[in-house]
Length: 562
Length: 42
Image 1 (cartoon, each protein chain N blue to C red):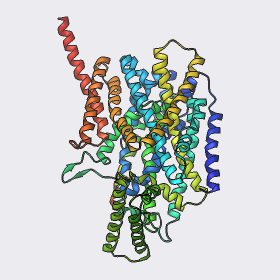
Image 2 (image 1 turned 180 degrees about the vertical axis):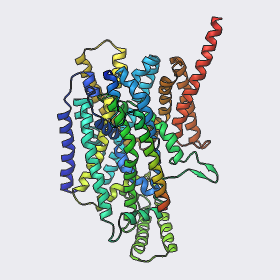
Image 3 (image 1 turned 45 degrees about the vertical axis):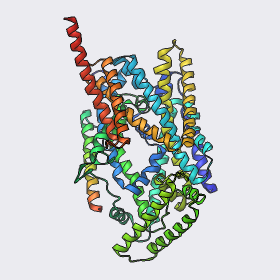
Image 4 (image 1 turned 30 degrees about the horizontal axis):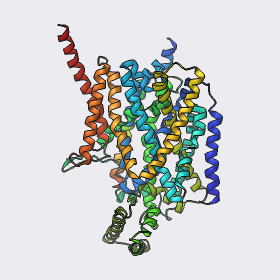
């Protein structure tokens, strides 16, 4: 990176920290630290919700996803607006009426202590680990792209935000997320403009879309239905997006404290509702535009040399392996193919197909080498596509701004999560299981727990780097395994008033075992079910089983009385 | 009318249900728009 890039990056990051410290002054009690004294207006609730959901990987991965697989990923968000409506009708008024700090407090009031403790523990376990991964994932990308030391990158990615999150709590998180999102959207808009600007003369946005469309990248709506019937293993289609995405969004926004904590800071029920509904209106178009950036980058590479593999560090790895001589030959042959493609003005359809097939062959060979156990490389370069374009083609200064965008996206999401991890630790465990504390002590412990979780997440990020893909995959699976069951508990709490704590607790344990079994069967290839459906199975399983258990236990009790 | 009821009144519309219909309606329109884009550029 050049000096102007460094200046832009450092100034942006320090401006956010200073702004967080300045705006984060709050009352020294739990209301001030975790709920910003319930004074946040709807537009800050909206930005808080969006900033918490959109991590660094969202901005890195989504354009790459569109580049390789097309825009069908946007369907994953189709269930979100529907979930926002259900939240506004049911969850938000209940949470506000009870004046709770965490979503899990509600479960004790509705069921019992053991159900509250179980769900809060699952949240701490899953969120604590996954936040470590959300630090690690962009750090690995930046360190391999820019040659930065991974330990320092992890510390900057997950550590600097601790300063304002510990000091100012929810208020600092809300204000910094506001500024962060403005910078992020500004940066992404400029990047989009630059891609179109760098297209050859006579090729504009419309032509770029046609190029992407011809290559199948504008496959926005897919049904997942073929001659063989519906593909249950297809992750992104209209049906999995609406149904699976609805359950995922409902569980994430309704039961995950990192999100619940954002709309609990609102001035009133109306402000919370408005923030959530606006999220329902803008989230899908926003995700569409981020994916569109990937299609534009794809169109750009139709007129410019496309790298054989976007992650240069993996090519360097091969250059040090037994494949080094073969790599030289392959890169030369690939370069010749690209030269032919770019220099010949009128290629026939057959020639174009031959070139595409040759390029796919070179990439497939590279991937096979990277998968060799002796090499131990990573054959997925999707997350590197957008940043590689930024590094190779954008002007100085703008590169620094887009690297800052990655940091800010990570910070917004991590800061909200640290705040929520701390609130659950003190409210659901420390205060609930120990002697009463003074207001000042509660405030001090809240800060200590925020700091502890910050350090924990950075340590997990470092561990994820050392252990490689195995930990990252395990944590990602962990999230999809628990979400549905937790949602099921909340749905029973809201909609099935006669079901008691023991029935829902037992059904949650049984359904969780069933979801884990489905995951194991899926991994062994015995069944074929995409992870989005786990949320549906988990939520529906808890609701049905708790109904049955309650019915039979009532029958038994009646017979016993007779 | 008490304070809580006044707080519950949504901006722009008389009822929250109008807001909900707006959100769901905009999703339907977006899906139709995306379907058109998919067909047009394929």
